[in-house]
Length: 261
Ligand SMILES: [Mg+2]
Image (tube, rainbow, N blue to C red; front, side, top):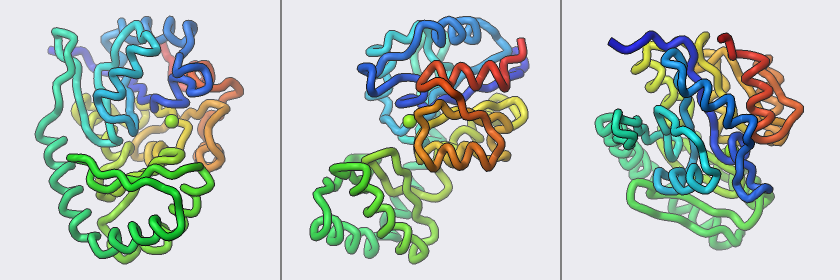
């Protein structure tokens, strides 16, 4: 019989727990809180990131995380759970369902994507990215260039209603509107039988916006380095915008909102 979970903490990784301006390191004060939280059977913490699984493991090792999250959500959708041997196991059914639906939706959007690739080639220096399981992505040469790319995409998206995208600074990937950080976390919360009132989310970038919804979490936190869209969303949702940056800002928000001992 597992203990009832009283608090679920969901953190974005880059910019929220580790700092890209400090060699992707985190913070010892945050690590102390994390160790304490991890030791409590009533609390679960999750990393929810745009990184793929190997790249996230590399990041956790690089930043020397003292404990590992019970769940990781990679590419905003793939769910892995830590087993009793300290190894991650994929939630195969969910992950395969996501991949199947995403591939169907990308096929449905093939004509739009073809025009999009032509737009990229003619108007930008952006790179088209295509990997197994990640069939339609872009790396722009700058944030400003990605702003222009997103503007084009936003004007066209209505043509394929099932199609969606996730943006993270100079990166974006097309996907299916049913799978983003918010819906993936909801799936994890349903497995744990945790309500939005018991859930805290923290993020700093565009792909975190789907987490900032009352159907996902009632506690919303952003570190001071969060981008403009995130800061606006936090203000609108009456979340907590920290004064501190990166992991310390995230911790500041956690302590101010959902750290009931
Ligand atoms: Mg981030």
